Image (spheres, rainbow, N blue to C red):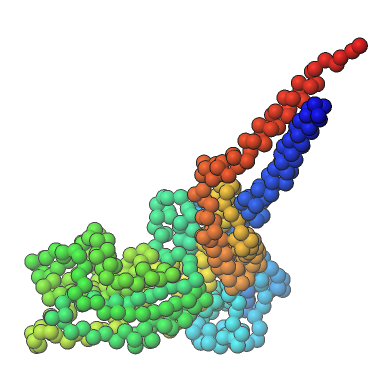
Amino acid sequence: MAVAGPAATDLEVVRGKRAALFFAAVAIVLGLPLWWKTTETYRASLPYSQISGLNALQLRLMVPVTVVFTRESVPLDDQEKLPFTVVHEREIPLKYKMKIKCRFQKAYRRALDHEEEALSSGSVQEAEAMLDEPQEQAEGSLTVYVISEHSSLLPQDMMSYIGPKRTAVVRGIMHREAFNIIGRRIVQVAQAMSLTEDVLAAALADHLPEDKWSAEKRRPLKSSLGYEITFSLLNPDPKSHDVHWDIEGAVRRYVQPFLNALSAAGNFSVDSQILYYAMLGVNPRFDSASSSYYLDMHNLPHVINPVESRLGSSAASLYPVLNFLLYVPELAHSPLYIQDKDGAPVATNAFHSPRWGGIMVYNVDSKTYNASVLPVRVKVDMVRVMEVFLAQLRLLFGIAQPQVPPKCLLSGPKSEGLMTWELDRLLWARSVENLATATTTLTSLAQLLGKISNIVIKDDVASEVYRAVAAVQKSAEELASGHLASAFVASQEAVTSSERAFFDPSLLHLLYFPDDQKFAIYIPLFLPMAVPILLSLVKIFLETHKSWKKPEKTD
């Protein structure tokens, strides 16, 4: 029995060592990888290299221009060279990381018989009516007709004409350099109808450096999938004024045709409201010489904030809201006029605020008070009001008066209040703006995910990023090919996908989970299990190391 005691003790020691080694092996080989795998932050792969390449993207905006020459527009020798194609390309000088080049591809050809007949008519309006083709031209394309130098189609002092659609007329010249001279005139007309530095600067105003060039361009609304337009009648003195306005009929006759023509740029919704006892919040200045009240220009920004709190339209809206306010001043402050910076009354008695809307002051005729008791009935002249609001609406969408070349006759807009090439010019600007916005959003997202490693990147977020990158590339390709409609649709998809990925709620789940909180959670879990195993391993190591150093007994 004395011999069995030490043997049993040695066996228990060996079992203990084996158990400690087994637990350590299981913890290291199986437990640690399993814990690492189950607690790691899932991050789907993203196209970081493609996103970084978007910063060096070069946009080539191609404008297809068909140039049609009549019989006596150029010398006979030059007519025999037709048809052929000439390309004119220039870089838009903007302080932006994305290089933008404008490319006018001019396809020269002779006029067909029906075109010759139309261009020989008495007026340019008759010619346009005869030249209307059953099939509309593609978005972004232009057609320029070159007529004889002595043609009576245009006034003799005019060298060119820009029509309401995608057509223009340019006088020819009998000169050995006819194609070069006419080509420069065509480029000037095409630029006025499509792309200019001002148009692109306004589109990229939020992405350009803060300087006087871009500060003046921040008036138009940012590109969006939809817009909400609210017409509000402000009657601060209902005891004196019983105001009636036919807003439904005015919207149907004047606003809706304009919005229908503009429908390619986004979806629109229109509503109206009447607000009583809504004050401007600024006390006007009384002028005893004219017995009138005036609002100075420097007081106009203070008018919007008190009124905006009463509107309540932008709080629940997903899209940008445009507010158009018709203000009928109270009897105590009538008549009320708006002054410009020089102190002169504004002709329209209205003003607009960039990316917000416009306000028009509507004074009641003083003769109305003499013939009636209070409250007087006021019937608003909606024609005069809608002329002002439509002009403001055009400015807020960036549809400004074009800079036409010298001696160029500009046609008036169509009945919708919008020329076809103005819509094309807006789509050009919106496409470039969307690409710039999508590129900036994707770059910011890639930088954020690269700096913070514990943000979860789910598969649906990654798919949105891939979709946005592909849409940016597709839009750039379509712009270079002159396909404006498909380029604009792709640019909208790029913005939508990039912002959907950037603002995905799953990106914020682990954003505020620092490392010290990880240690506070895992140490109470692993420390009670790890200490006995580590102490056993240390003891085994020391005993093994001691046994190796113990000298062997020799006889």
